[in-house]
Image 1 (cartoon, rainbow, N blue to C red):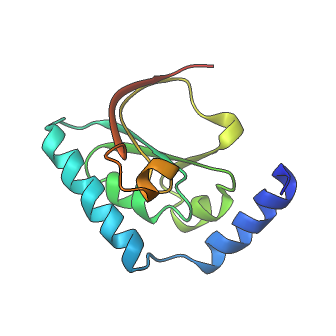
Image 2: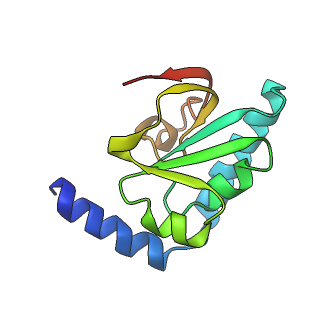
Length: 122
């Protein structure tokens, strides 16, 4: 799948899949537990692979949250008060916390879903 067809696929998928399924809610609960355990006050959070943005919305309750996805348009439409970026436009700078529900390591159950004090630069 090339970038163009992948973007089209995910735009369609995120428009249709606005809410979380049971697996996604389980992952979200684990991430929120890990985030809470960090004890970071008002963190700047980056949600990698944010999909439709529902998790970014929840993360915004902890601090400033932004999302990144191959197809960020649906998330921007569902949550216009939050900021979403295409993968090619990951904002440079420092985030206190980087979250990814959909990374390969997360699928294998490895504890890499929450990374603290990540620096992203171009």
